[in-house]
Length: 509
Image (cartoon, rainbow, N blue to C red):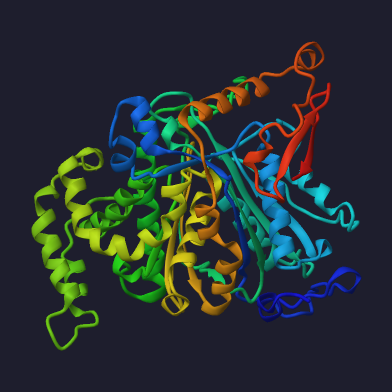
């Protein structure tokens, strides 16, 4: 029988009894996330151990806010982790393969310049006979998962929808060349089931988008490597600047809809794309700086309206805590009002000031979403959705009901969005969290030494450089029996062999 969550949220017939949506049916309402699954590798390397190797105690753990970094061996690739997370979601929720009408994949981990991951996922559908599945891959750095999600939602809401579920897969393997960027790697995947009457919905009338042409992080097609080319300082600047622009556009739409200004006190929680955890701390604090400036039409202006609104809103019998915060903000930040845009991004004193002012709220509103970022690392397209699963895994259902949650998605190059979502059914969300079992996934892992981790990455490098001649002349396209399979959980898909035409084949442990 279907799990009670899906019975409650999305009634759809299975197999040949599928009821198709037609123009005479009422349009779907409350389209959003019905179910979610997360995959993280079983292996990790300690950031403390990486610090010892690199002779920089505290740089990664304190400076970047990281604890562990998940990674996978050469026996896993982007196809295998996508296969694993999709099959796991379908099994846990007892979803018929015939009930899937669209698959959207977001990734920047490309192992084939033509064949999509989505087509590889169709191997899971062979037995069901369902080849009537729309959708394909989306690529733009870490933003692909969000674009895949929006595509899926728009399909369900459109006249093209046939009554079946959409499936979104955000999966990536983040690996960097040896050097200062390597500790900001990670690996993982998130699968989301999309349909109407969902417990988690996105608010389509208030959002902010931004896109422009920048080379802050990129992977030229002629590079035979998994390692990107990165301008770290430029990428951080682009991340923050895009957040500013998206937030201002978000605030403008919010004011038009609600007739009053939005500020971060109205966000119950916030989720951020997390290249590393400390950047999220800075990003949340940056929102307060925007509120303080009251920036409108992309210009800095001095506006005392924020303080006035805070004093007037929800005053209690005693002195208003919000007004006290506003007064403290005014005293603390007034010295920085003359800063230019560029100066405000680089000034350490300003950064420290806004972080101090948002520290308490950060611990309550942001920290519950940081489990995967701190303990696994950067999941690229899956990062912000792993943060969502972290949040619902760490917060009691009663504290989520009706809450307003901001979601900031950023992809280098660049494309960024600030969205908002609402928890409609906390009990259903609790079921999603229980099925994801994030805490168990994080606690039941294998610690690997830095030396072994480095050796495993070298093996991945060698595999990527293979040519058809290499298959026939050297590497025979397969591994010794059980090679590295001890690092995988049961039920994990893995790369079994590569044939002489560089076609990849997979098995399940």
